Length: 217
Ligand code: HEM
Image: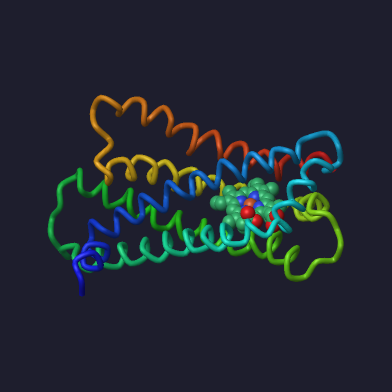
């Protein structure tokens, strides 16, 4: 194994991969939310559908899409790998301090919230992306969204998933800065304040969409 492979597969290297892919996925979320907010525009989805059509047909976006899905997969794969190795090196029957108890609990919750978000993503991508790209029925994307959120159970599933996403992002945002050595005392407060935008405001804005469609129709 050469030096860079050895580093990337070490525990520190894997944590760095988690942080970098995490930051990349944060930037996707901002872009995704920006486009989705056009769903609220009172034009029956005309503007939103122009964007959706562009995203589906502009050829230069295909490699970016592949990069995006690879980013999600890498983040999930390395996350599971880290979780498995952390479990196998954790001492069994050893009395640990309260601080490490709570950090174990935090990363355990981060793992399970991550798993739920991954399940959400599979269902979400199937509903909108796969159906519109591979089995198009000529209906505009706005209609697909409005149709999906007619179902109260589907809306509840989204709300739970977005609450989990919020928790996952809260842990992830702080831990990414920590891993990269950027969480220095001077910027701690700033990181926490900017973090609120990511883990609280973004999921709330996403959650408003299914609620809006459920209540508006
Ligand atoms: C709850 C509000 C949301 C709505 C209404 C929504 C809507 C959509 C739509 C319409 C598409 C298909 C876009 C296209 O193919 O042109 C899509 C794709 C996708 N969504 Fe969402 N989304 C929401 C939340 C999320 C969240 C929270 C995540 C990530 C955690 C996410 C991740 C993705 C991914 C990875 C794709 C496939 C890539 C893409 O088409 O850009 N979505 N979403």
